[in-house]
Length: 392
Image (cartoon, rainbow, N blue to C red; front, side):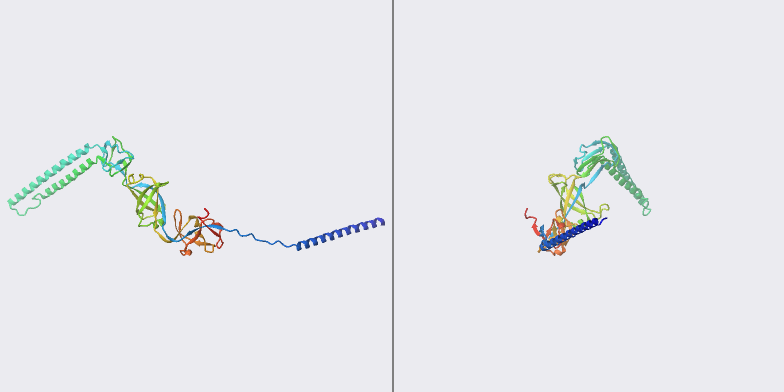
């Protein structure tokens, strides 16, 4: 490389280096100026958003005397249902037209007749045997009296019972009593050829026809007593303990139809718990259930019904809306400072439209209860109250 070329290269490197230094200085000056301008500006003031006002719906409740309402459902059962059975053997020679399902029959109505000829013969034979027994007694009495006379004539002292034929007379008397009983039995069997309704009731089944030969004990039909019906309502042991023992009268209604009601009375409460359901049966009865003169409609066996049992009254209870009592048995309330308070509740009973609870910390005072939106609240938060009746 010549000296001229070396000199030109040195001049070119100096010019590039000088340009780079100047550019760096300009950038530094610009950054310093920008920082001074940003520092001189006032920082914006942060303002937290205004808290949103929470409005809650409240209901005023006070403590007092409240009674649980105990509800249960059951099926109407017959009070008595009997098999109409033959008590003698024989062929059916007649059947009453009333022996049909659904018909009402009066007590003593002849429902069927069994051929009676053989039983009439038995009665005649029993009468003959009774007459013969009476004849034998008369003969033995006469022989006994004659034996006494003969003994006295022989002057043999005090006669023995055998000499006076007393054993024979006693046997004749026993035979007479037996023949009387046999005649009663024969007459009874004859009367049993007429099969009668044991009580006033409704025929629910027919099992025999004309010409059938039936044996003793065979059923010709089924009858249920219409004097009353029975309903077995199942309640928990806890609910049974709440029933008012002084209030035996209840009203039952057909399930799904509140217009059909019947007066009933509690007759008894089972003393044992059903091992399968762990419930106790409360037995109620309705008198004359098929009489439409005293009832708006006949209460038929098999009807599905509901009943409400009035419980014993408890003092110092609060009747709260269903939604006011949470699953953890807490109740949200609003105090005099419009602050949310959470109270512990002791549930006594759940009625159809309310929950009866004790609120120990309320000390019997009126309480503003929150019944909606509790999940958005915490204890101590300020709220605005709105009565459930306001703004509606």
